[in-house]
Image 1 (cartoon, protein in one colour):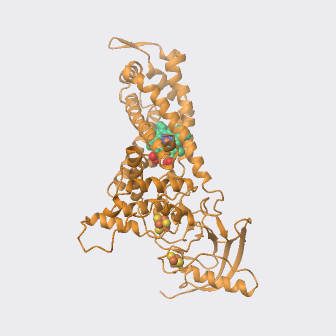
Image 2 (cartoon, protein in one colour):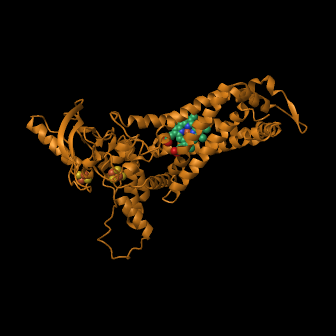
Length: 253
Length: 229
Ligand code: HEM
Ligand code: SF4
Ligand code: FES
């Protein structure tokens, strides 16, 4: 597939000086973008233009640019990580857009993710949830020999699938309730499925959910939007497992 | 305990249990109502209604049912308010249709419309049968037992009023939509789900929802279209 050139795009983007200021949309025109470039490359080119015109460049989060770190964000044309599935914004390509289109770029919106500047939001709330229970308290040693600790293949697979979560927060951004349940359920599941994590499973579910509530995330109503928008396709069956762990912990206390 | 009932998963637990309880009621209610169209003499339906009005167990369950509705409704507004607060600045553009079902995103709207229907429905039949009485309800004897002629009241309502018939059809469809999401969601909330059951619950939910919607809608249609003749 040869790359085409998008002659003109309008980028309607959220500009906000700092956490305190009000913020508003600005629309910029950008020309001659290759459909082979990534969305973030397009943003780089736009920022270059802005700098040349003496305008403050648009702040946005990015790091690995290969879909593994979870740093990039952006709500593009009404969807977290834009109009593609199972990708992060750094993996989104401009071939997903049409020439002449107006592309709306917003920060993640959630009470627990306040905007710091432009498109950058503060996602330390997710770290705080992890600190509340997303760990194993004792040193479990180095990598054990294969099959030294028996783990059923299905369990290993489900644990690995849950461990694929990169903590990007797209689930929160996508959820109509700004709930972090998919994130929390992934973190609870990948430990609850393995022997090293099982010991603290009950306390972990309780503590992480309490933290999530305290930080102002909403509750889950099982719409399933998170799973669809998650770049790693974390399954909502993990949420069922989290519910189960949490309710068990509540009843046994 | 109070902390549990207001924690995010606890709130949902209340919704789920009350919802499942209401779904059991709806199944019984629909089963009984369908007697309306399976026996044009009205005897079967009248016997069913009489049994429900006099059975001691039903008398115990009735207030619990009222409570179930209250809890479900109060918690639904509470939950939705909490969830609404979690996003103070809304998105300028949202494109959610590919990621979640319309019903799942509009449970409060669907529920509230069901509530409006419910109030009209209670004023329409329940109050008349239980408290105020109605000329059409005059006692008849079925197989030697005297009972209210509930069939006469219900069938006359649908035969005489297109507006009410249409309202009842809409009520059935709205409830069906509510349950197309609510059914499987309630089991997910309880944690009774995994990668095998997810699809199964969703299919069972669609089947249950269609039965509820079609079942309740077919009754007024039957009388509206004169099929009892
Ligand atoms: C016969 C009537 C009704 C039945 C059988 C019913 C059943 C259900 C079920 C099974 C759920 C799913 C619970 C879960 O996801 O765990 C649900 C959710 C819900 N119901 Fe109802 N419901 C009824 C009436 C109402 C009414 C009258 C209202 C409100 C005014 C209402 C509002 C809601 C809301 C907002 C939810 C979504 C809550 C959530 O998913 O977190 N429902 N309902
Ligand atoms: S569950 Fe998916 S969407 Fe949510 S933080 Fe993890 S990777 Fe991102
Ligand atoms: S920048 Fe690392 S995932 Fe996108």
